[in-house]
Image 1 (cartoon, rainbow, N blue to C red):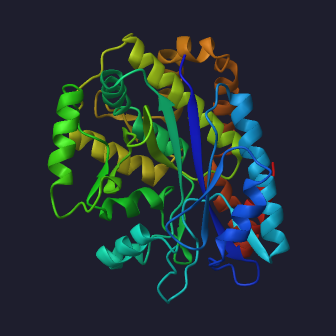
Image 2: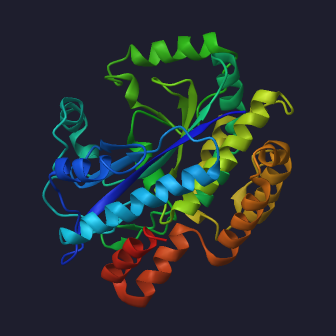
Length: 359
């Protein structure tokens, strides 16, 4: 039985202007670390805060930790004249370059890819799922390749960029295509193949350190886990936990060897991920098995069918069914952001996102 962890990135916005607000993160860290489970971490930009959960055995633990931190962060932000939001891209950004977190690595990244870094107002959801050994991890990566576009569509929550609707549900996914190593990972023969190819990539000047390997799923450098980074930061804790339990179900299904991973054509997967970022849950996706159009609802049914045993083993199946149905009927983050904007433009969108942090 595997465990999982969730890392959530959040933006802080000036409550008057709606622009990202660079803050001294140490007071936030001290105020939040002392009373919450998990860990408060620095992120790339000074307007961001990251929370990493502790190792979770079940979804109730994850919901408690994420919800508790989010409410505390929202309260601390409000007392400082800020709004905080779990969204994948900042809807409006300042003209001047961003302030990077006072961290040597982040400062170097800002210099190395200054044109990209200057626009990296992006927040993601990272899910770690434990695996027993590297071979199991590679089996999981290979199996996940075909599911990453669907998880991108479900987790899409970044429709606005530079003050306009980008026409994408996940602009963050499109922005990441500018980085040197990104997208759906290749198919690996085994763990030796994975390590060999990683070594070749890391040996190039285009990748200054292993953290630049930005595949949507990869083996963690630090932990015995598969790390899945395909989803945007989520408006609500429940949506983050839904994506986490779905991913754990898929990883456990892969590790159990119940289904063979298909070596899908990389160009089909790349196109499928692009279309998932474009349409989110509101339009058709690419069926990675056939290349034909397919509804998100049908892909979700397929996922539940394939991962059913693993989901039931953790008591997550009914939660996943009900939560997916609600998401598909009432909207994921991108749909809800657009609805909030229609009711009152960007300031209403941000105020609504701040409120959803506390649900």
